[in-house]
Amino acid sequence: MDGDSESKYVPKHGLSIDKQQAVVEGAQFVEERYGRNLDLSLAGKAKLAIRRRIAGALMVDVDLDQPPEDVTPSTNVLEKWGPGCQFYGNGSAEDLDDLERRCERGEKFLALFCEFPGNPLLQTPDLRRIRALADRFAFAVVVDETIGNFLNIHVLPHADVVVSSLTKVFSGDSNVMGGRSVATLSVQTIADRTSSILNPSSRFYNQLKSKLESEYEDNYWAGDALFMERNSRDFVSRIARINVNAEAMCSILKASSFVKEVYYPKYSSTRPFYDQYRNSTGGYGGLLSVTFRTRPEAIAFYDSLETAKGPSLGTNFTLRSVESDYFHKKHTDRNKLSVYALGPLY
Image (cartoon, rainbow, N blue to C red; front, side, top):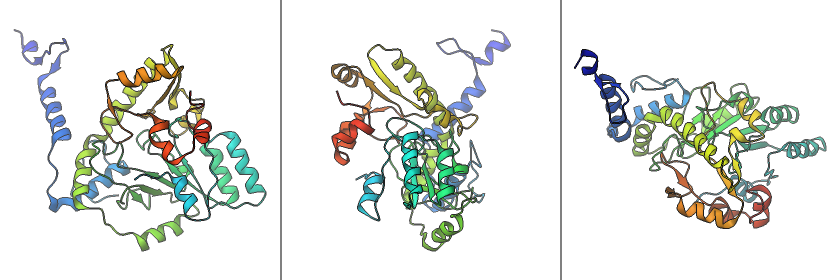
C-alpha cells in the first residue's frame, strides 16, 4: 500500500477520512453524547458555561474558569390572573390592524407577547410593525424565540424582552429543565424554567433590570446545572443537523399528493418576516406541522411513522404528536381550534 492509502481510513461506504480526524471526531462525539457530568463542586462554573453558550461568546468549547460576559399556555395565565388579555391567534396583518384601532381609541396595553415563529402553524409575525406600534403607544414587546432559537434568529433589536426555554432544544435530552435571564446583551442569570433577555435600548430596560436585580434569587439546583451544561455541549452542531433534517422532511412531505399543507417557516407566506431576523448561518428550525387531505390518510401516516410519540420540543430525536387533540383540547375549545390551529378539523 502506498503512503497515502496508509494514512487514510476507508469505511464500507467508500468515503476516505483522515485517520487522525476520525479519532478526534470520535472522541468529541463520545464526550458530547456520553461524557460525564462535571463534579458537583463545579456547579457554579457549569452555570457560567451555560451563560457563555447562550451569549454566543463560545461556539464550540468553553473555559470553565473564564467569567461570563402541568404546562399552561400564556393566554390562560393572563386570562386567569391580572387585567386579562386580547388574544390574536393568527398574528396576521388584520390582527395588527385591530390592535392599532384599539390603541387609537384609547385602549391601553401593558405588553404584546408573540412567538417567533408561532406554534403550530409556524407563521412569523411582522415584528417591525409590532415594534412601531409599541413605540407609538408605549407598550412592551415580549418575543418568545424558543421555536426559532437564538442560533437561527436574532430578534432582540426589535423586542424589549426576549424569552426562551433552555428545557427545549438547548438541552435536547429531555432530562432537565432550565431557562435564562439576561440584563444586558450577555447572560446574567439562570432562571427556573423560562429565560428572559432584556434589551438595553428599551425604554423599559432600567425598570425591568432594577426589578430583576431586587427580586432575583439563584435557586437553580446544582444537579440541573450540571446536566444542562453537559447536554448543551453539542448545541451548535445539533441545531445545524436539525435545520437540515427538518427541511429535508418538508421537501418529502410537500411532494406527496396525500398532503394538504406543510407548515414551516421556509414555506410560509410570512417567510420574509422570518428572514429579516435570520442569522447568516441560521436555518428555519426543527418544528413542522402537516395536514392531510383526508382523516384516514392522516391516521395511516401517524401510525406508520417510525418515530417516538410525544409533545416535547426538547429531544435530540424526532417526535410526532397530534397537535390539536393532544394538547389544545385541554385548554382551548374546538371552535378556536378550527380558527387558530390547523384549520377545519376533518
